[in-house]
Amino acid sequence: MSKFQEFGLDAEQMYVREDKTLQELANFFGLSIQTLSRWKIAGDWEGKRKKYRGTVRSTIDILEDVLRGKAEELRTMAASAITAEYTDALVKLVASISKLKKEDDIRVQAITVMGEFSKFVKRQGLDDKKLMPITKLIQDFFIYLKDI
Image (cartoon, rainbow, N blue to C red; front, side, top):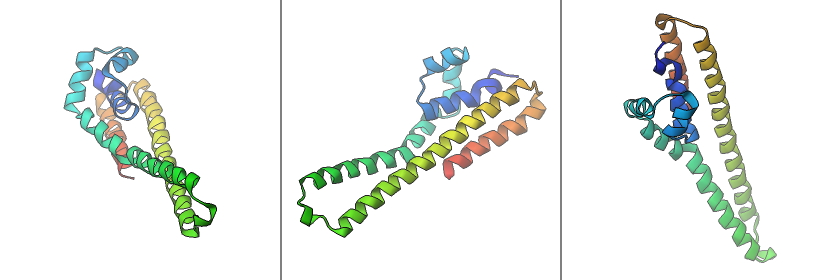
């Protein structure tokens, strides 16, 4: 089994989704930074990291900033100026943030489970012919997670 088959997907996920550095990955997996750097370039890990950062996480951050601004407004408003529409907008904002965080948590949990499954598969000592379809399914599953 090649180093990439053994560690590549896990290293990529840790780089993209957990913001690990190549040095942290090298220490964790016992690989050279040069090897990880080749994988990073070949697999466009940097592009995937930027795309991941720009999806759910940034949306949550934006909504939380809006909510903080609304909370600050609320502190200075007279009680009579707080309308049902304003309150409804705040409730919807909080609900949206909660929903997005839950979806993000589901992705993180799925990635964690698939990471453990990948480790399990690697320990089975399968030859490349049997391992490749499983590896392809895992990669396809991660792509699927990105799109939900």
